[in-house]
Image 1 (cartoon, rainbow, N blue to C red):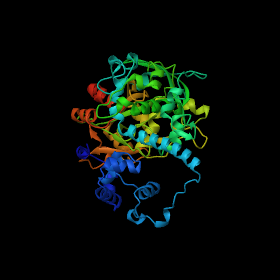
Image 2: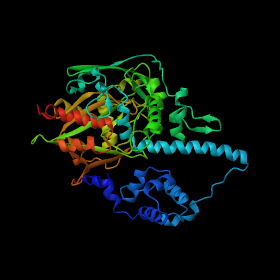
Image 3: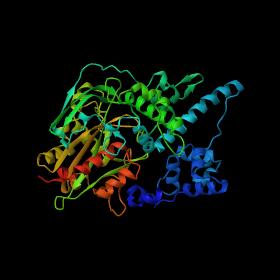
Image 4: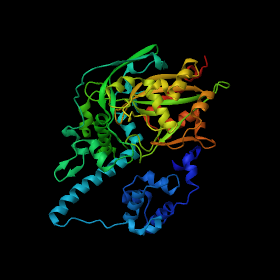
Length: 492
């Protein structure tokens, strides 16, 4: 897989090559001296094998002091070998008393196994999603991607975003399955002798926290009906962790199941009690389903009718979900900018949410999270105002291709496409950042800028959806967008 990635490039990777970094050669020398492969070394360092591979190949630059210290400690290396001052390393003390030590070791063993399993989960998400797809009715599948949808969630053609009506449901909507049931115990590590973490997100927060991990209010999908002529979606309010407590737990459950080990990964209902508790994945009354919005951004050349699109690599160190794989950009949770009730209504709009993500993920601007206790004034915001004007004159058109569920996590994504004429795109997004808070933009190897993106061609779409580690929502969007390319790229 590594050899085939030369067709892609990123500014971040190019800048990395200009720096002197001792770590890649140190790791290679250590493996050679001890007869280890990359998988062995990854296990010693409690890192993902793909991450170690990227370090050695110069694709990942480690600047996190804690990570470097951990590597030096685990490999018993002089800190100077990694360019670190010797006083930074301190001995770790062990509590005295054999009984206490035994209890601590039991907890540590549980936590270490959980962290190893989570790294393995992130490494194999694509394979596990394909295995999970076999658990559900074939007619629920959308194309070849490991993605499920109810029939009335997928319109027969691109639906203009403005033709979707959002409805609000007041009052709390009860939950039947939350991820705190006894069936979740096997995927919850010990937090103290005789006690487990009560929620999966609590384990993530204390044992494997990504850079971005906040329990924000989110819009919970209660119902959706979409056709090519219009649609409705009904929502209530919940939280982001309500989603992760169940979705990441059932993914973890499948990853550690006996059937998912070895070369042939399978999924067996008998080994998946928590997933079985969910039952019908489309029954939105049983669990909290907070959809993300993922967008295929097409830069349309009006002169030729051709298009390019933006691709994003999600850094495992920065994100809690869909880590280490490619996705479309922008993508983010459908949620208010703050917990204030006034912002719930102010932000309860698909397009406004998407524009916030464009600002944060592509332009690298600070998250507009309402931290100043003031609601976001969209009409006074230059980026939003310019995009609204472009929408009115037809040089920007947002579409919805449906709503679906990833088979591994059963999380929902609203599938969208935004077609932007080249002159508008270059004006508004020409200063795109190569690296953002969740990962980095990726372009074709011969491109001079990350905003060049990838060519929207059959070859590119097929490669990303069949041969590369691509998140299932993005793969589904690409497949359907290619199917409807003439309608999407037509200049009215």
